[in-house]
Image (cartoon, rainbow over all chains, first blue to last red; front, side, top):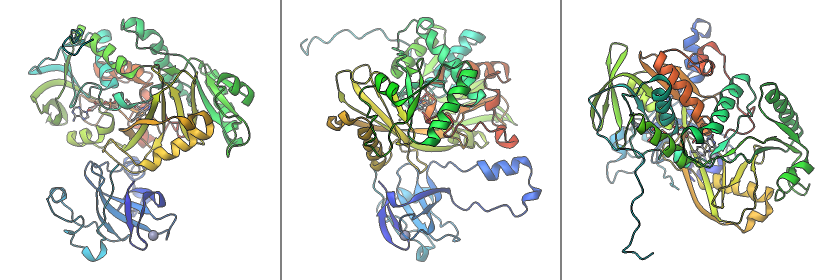
Length: 121
Length: 406
Ligand SMILES: Cc1cc2nc3c(=O)[nH]c(=O)nc-3n(C[C@H](O)[C@H](O)[C@H](O)COP(=O)(O)OP(=O)(O)OC[C@H]3O[C@@H](n4cnc5c(N)ncnc54)[C@H](O)[C@@H]3O)c2cc1C
Ligand SMILES: [Zn+2]
């Protein structure tokens, strides 16, 4: 069970949240100009990163607000949580394994991020 | 037997050769699909100078972790065709591979718990019959007769309103299936190379000419990707994208019990599926963990929900204990159908996206993918499953349509 720190409500169990997949996918500026390939990319193609991944979650049974998260898809460690509309904070993969580094501590957008922990099972 | 008299090691079923400098084709991934593909390449297309490259040990991925349900009662014509072909192959493979992997056609029941379920189920039975797939609609009384331990009374939250039943469906022993294919592959001259991770591809323009591995560089005419949960990672190395999301999928077993469960029961609505393995464990599974994950483990609440569902449907399971839980990495697509065919990279082919339900498809995936690798063209059965369907919009939407996803 992941322990997720909602930016509004604080740390809560994963069961209170719903997953929203990859973050930072913008609706196409000029949908009519897209080729079939580009539509397919927008509709069906998402990154499937093995490692640090920017994704969306919604606190469905709490404040019902969406937010973004940087999470490692192998260790499931949560590196950063940041508001919708904020750019993805820097979190180079090699920092993830740097000893003694608090999760989220190295992100430049530190005011918008909430260091969190996650529980592996 | 005393400890200082261990029995002789049984005969090895395959060699463990070092990789050669070059092959006519290389299959990446030594799970069920990679093994079946290599087998049919050698047997049907005479391609014996080929290798299977497996980063871990043979069939230690989803092949080792799945709950082995085999059925073909999918809704859409394209799916029914390929899964029914697979089922027919399962029926003859023990003899062909000269290996009894305990394919047990004990039937699969898909329960209906709502009026919507009932309508969809009856529609699916009709569609299955038109496609030559054996299918029946059972009322709650018939459900009870076939599986007496199921609670078919109306004292549960979602009473059983009936079920579809496919008598020819069932389970098999997954490890033995892998070993059966591996032994035949080896006999036909295929090199099975374990502990050999593919780390990159060598290309000449848009054409693949070799693979980089943890055991050196290997030149090859053709590459077939059968990497299940890691398909996106390999595609990225090769320079193209796949519409795949990798998720943890968990399952569990109880301790051994006397035979109590005569068939396979799946419930999409209450969300659990259960069979009893040949040895006696109750084998249970449900849906994926919601998040993307490559960790081969998921969250405990998912296990808890499927156990709650199991106890609701099978009250006698309340006394059973969970012995082991585990997870695999499944490669899901948005239409819950696989992707098999050519890729944007010349001479590179992909078989993936079987997600939560690809064990049953193993023989047909292998047969048709081998055809595609050998000839460079789609097989009649895998043609609808080409990558291009995400551009043309010809999706094969088996979400929900196929009863449950396994
Ligand atoms: C818990 C669970 C229950 C399931 N239940 C069912 C079921 O009841 N019925 C059903 O039909 N299906 C089921 N499935 C799905 C089924 O297991 C898969 O669809 C199927 O096994 C995938 O094909 P495979 O056997 O080739 O995959 P895998 O066995 O995962 O093979 C892929 C292989 O590729 C290797 N690989 C990855 N990257 C590399 C690399 N870079 N270099 C070399 N090798 C690499 C991996 O190590 C792995 O061995 C289940 C899956 C899970 C996890
Ligand atoms: Zn909240």
